[in-house]
Length: 354
Image 1 (cartoon, rainbow, N blue to C red):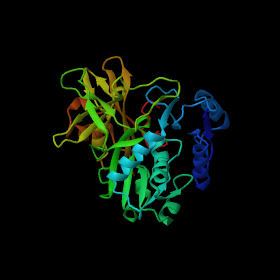
Image 2: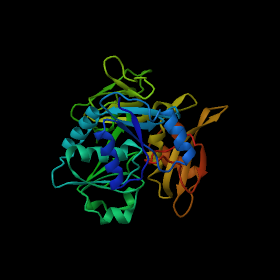
Image 3: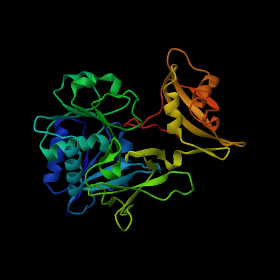
Image 4: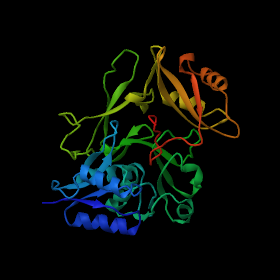
């Protein structure tokens, strides 16, 4: 029987060689985050049952904490990996002249999918141990996957296309970039600039209350088979509830509002952190910002702005006025925290619970 094999190696040619060796033997690979200490690696591998049997056709088990914080293993089959590679390559119009660069963490699907996509399509591939601006700019790559926090550190014009995942993209993102929406459970991004990839179905579930957004549901051949512990999150007819809320825009594109659990209810009003963050990001004294809810006896939750300032920190009054210029007053922050750096995941997503 095929088994789950740990792929505990930094990015580079050896990572690709080991992945192909595991697949050639009929086994499935579990990429291990190289930033974890040894004891954490052992706990993760035990939780994902590395060494135990997998089903024939399973290609990858990718660890994700999802919305619970507990590690889960997303099982992706070879068919799912192939479907993802083909759909993304068609959307990006990848040709024999292209060259992929993988520089994001390979234990996360955003970095790993660059490798598996290139292997499936036979596209030239360079794999780096991590983000290295000098090495990236010295490469011959035409295609690269980045996150918003790394984008300013490279010359975007050297690439034909930049695939942007992770947290919200900058308002002034380069014209040769595309934004993606997807989950570990979808094997990669499945919605590009608001438009689903070929073969991907998107539905919006009925909102819980009138005037609110509905949960995004996804269906397609690149979805996970199950979680490693045997729990299949998909419905009987193949839909994956994402836990993200969204809506269809008038032009037919999907707009992702945010995680259901991120919504702040303050004084009975619903506030989406992403909308407030987008407003505050335009403030001249704000270099980076995160918005979250803080428990409060009077309001239920307060809207808190965590700000990385530019040369001088803004005042709370200035930030409130800036938000109120385009949003209702209840969306303006009532508390300000100034920090040197925002807490983020390896793929640039904000850790609002930190």
